[in-house]
Length: 414
Image (tube, rainbow, N blue to C red; front, top):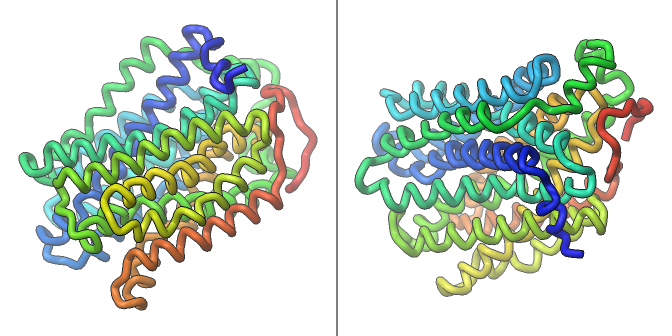
C-alpha cells in the first residue's frame, strides 16, 4: 500500500482541517521569510549594518516561545479553532504594520510582536490536525503540515522575485497581510477538535504546573531536541539569500537567485512528505536520524557546487534531508505530549528551541568573519555539526508512535 494512501481515506471535514493547518503554517512562514529576502535593502534604507537587521530575525525567534505558551494555554482552555483564528489575525496585522516602520527600532519592535503571534500558530494548528485524523495518517499528515514551512519560503521568494523591484521592501510586507483571509476559511469549514471537546467533558480543568507534573524531564528534552531542529533549519535557510547575493553575486531579484531558492524549497517539500510518511513504518526517531545524517554528504554540493545546475541540485538535496527530518516533528511532538497539554507543550518546546537557536544567523556571520568572510564555509560547518547533534538527541529520546489521543497516560520522564 502507498504510504500516502491514508490521505485519500480522510473525510471532507478532516481534509479541510488538515488544509487549514497547512495553510496557517505556510502563510506564517511566508510572512517570516519576507524579511530574510530584504536584509540588504532594509540595512541600506536605515543606514545600518546587516547584523543590525538580522537582529530582527533573532527577536522574532526569541519571541515565539511567549506566543506558544500564551496561545497554547488559551487553546487548551478555550479550544483550538477560535484561538487559531485570533492568532492568524494578529500575525497578519503585525506583518502589515512592519511596512510602515519609520525606524529600525520600530521595525525590531514589530518583528518581536510578530514573533509572539507567529509562536502560537504551529502548536495550535498541529494539535488541531493531529487530533482530527486517524492514527495511521499521522506520519504523512505530519510531513504535509511541516511542508507548509518551505512552501511559505517559496511563496516569499516568488513574491520577492516578482514584486520587490516594483513595490520595494515595504510593499512586500503589505502583501504579507493577506494571510488574515485564512480566518474566513477556518470559520466556515473547520470544526473544533473532538478530542479537545471530549477532554473538556471528562477531565478536570488543571493548571499548567499540575498538568506538567511528572513530565518536566520530557519537556526539557523536547526543548533541546527542537533547538537542534531549529539550528538545522534556520542554519540552512535564513542566510541562504545573503549567500546568493554576496558569495554567488546574484542580484536579489534575479531569475537565477529565485531558481536556487525554488529548488531549495522543492527539496524541502519532497523531503517532508517522504520522510514523514516513512516514519509511519520506520519509526519517528530512526527516520529523524537517517534524514539528519544524510544531509552531511550533500553539503559540498550545496555550498560549493561550482555551477548553477550543481548548486541547484545541492540546494534541493540538502533540503530533502533537513526538512525530511522536520517532517516527523508535528506527529512526534504531539504523540509525546501529555493529555491536556497538547495545545501547549509541542508548540512551546518547538518555539523554545527557536529561542535557544535564535543566534544561528548571527553565529554563522561571526564564523564567516573569523574565516575571511566565507559564508559558505560557515554554513557548511554549522549544518554538519548540527546534523550530528540532532541525530544523537533523537537517538537518546523516547517515541510514542501510534498512541491514542484522549487517553490518560502514566507520568514519566524521558
